[in-house]
Amino acid sequence: MPPDLLPLPPRGRVPNNPQPARLYRAALSGTPAQMQAHLAANGWTNAWQNGIYPFTHYHSTAHEVLVIARGQAHLTLGGEGGPQVTVTAGDALTLPAGTGHRNDGSSADLLVIGAYAGGRDWDTCRPETTDPQGAQARIAALPDPERDPISGESWPAAT
Picture (cartoon, rainbow, N blue to C red):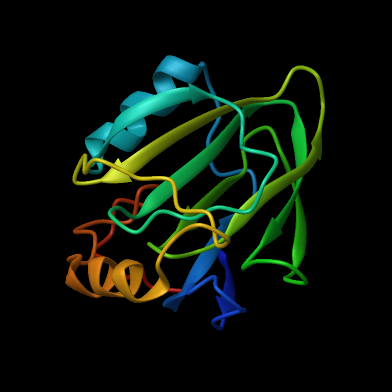
């Protein structure tokens, strides 16, 4: 099933990205280790398992995928006033570098697997403290991912 495309224009000091965020419903199942292995097989590594910060942030040095391994969360995308989505176990989001995101509330059992295209190191940029021009320069210098983390197709995946 193709992902929902979520175009997010710049919003205040959140740059977002010309490429849309992608929301995949019921994309992956299995154990967290199996989900992480699926992402790694498609070139998305440097993974972690935890939750999502409860403040608006973005990454200027890496494209990120978030997979909901357990529980559910309500997220705001793109910065203050941006669209809100509810994600549940098995859902995944790809967030091109610069895409703002924030956890507005989640179940106590929330477990998220995060990973980065090409295993790149990631930073945490907060709109109120990050130089937007410096962040834009880092985002513009990033190569596109080679493959979609869910389908494994060439980036951008056919939709």
